Image (cartoon, rainbow over all chains, first blue to last red; front, side, top):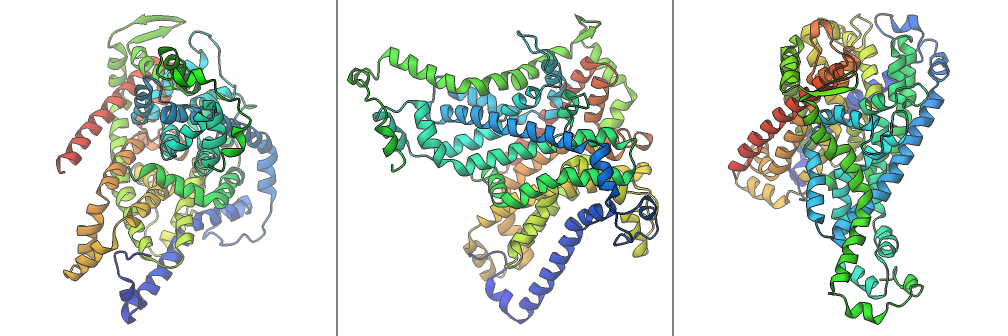
Length: 290
Length: 314
């Protein structure tokens, strides 16, 4: 490990050692309180009764933990249905992003057709446009697609197709494909492999890590998104988790809303704990080393 | 090479003539068509949901659609939007939020990253902790803040802590002056993890010899941060400042959930929330499009100035 701001030797010596361990203890305790504390409060708060939650000072651990709030949340808010919808949209998003974005990035990186750079430039330019600016015209487009005049409201396509238009994915994938040696592809072509064959048999097997990153980001994007699904999935049958909980929040006891929020957060937390390495590396490879 | 070998045998051998004709026009056309065939899916999605809406947003802002009839109305939508009393309040709130979020949410992740980079223990644990809130659905995290943390009674988490250490309690979202700071705290908690990780990665790229040399010259910790760490991460610092400002200017879900939209005495209304209100509640999609164009222009002007300022120094 290379040296950082403070040298290793200094941290091992008497006073440095003491300061290091004190600071480490304080930071570990502080971070646990700040980042895990609220989640603890959320999970246990939803175990409390309505009376206990209004009690001052608040209790650290529920006196009489009951799962009623979680059961109410699951049944009254139809969380199973909402969760299925969200999973379905997330799975489709992964599929369409992998198919269309890898194909496009492959074309831009290796096939390089005429005007490829113009198209890439136009795609990357969308990174500069704030999402809120486009929300109204995107909505108007989704309710009446140009030329074919199809209304996408309440259809999963309204979530899947806009997610394919993800310049960050194209950029990430293209940069990864750029790093694959040209010789490999030339060799495959010599042997008569079609571009599709080259993509499928050479590029994709080598790109598993980046495909993993793209897939994980697609799932979390669908899971976290709020405004767009709220607009294009207006009926209760097609809502996503976040939107469904928000829709019920007004007329539901607070503890039940919190219990529902806990349940809604579980899948993303599990995904994070399972794939933290991929997520963190994906986050940093995309943004750095330019 | 090993991966390729088994599949090649299954392929039909290329006709020798195709090899010879590589440079011919027919071949070029075919190659280009193949390339565009791979692009078509993504290009269509970009066209439908990015490029076309961008143009359409501008066009819509000069039109008015009533009962299915669209007419050109010149600057009417802009005049109407700017005359709305909420317009200036929303911009003021959005700017205050952006600046406060920058003060808290910009410097903090950098120093957290510097601190984490020095630790030789518990690194993975601390990293997971910082990034955990980023993975929560924002709606879930905000209900936690709304109902538990910002409960204005003494039973609320923050008030219980304030009372415990002998500080005066706050009404949080019910108090117009606390609304924006409360949204900044929630937003920073939810979002700072990504910035911390990006900084950590760039800190790891700083050559150790630079610190070594600075230390030999007698530079203390703060001097080393100022003279080595900051110059070495300057690019990423500049980039993230820009990304953060563009993101915080679009403040939307925090007011919607924490403050039920406008908040006490309009203290939470943001520009993005106003777009939503006009477009989807006041049946004024054209006005909302005009407001979107204004937002785009403000952000573009800001970016231009910012790029100018940061590149001039080099």
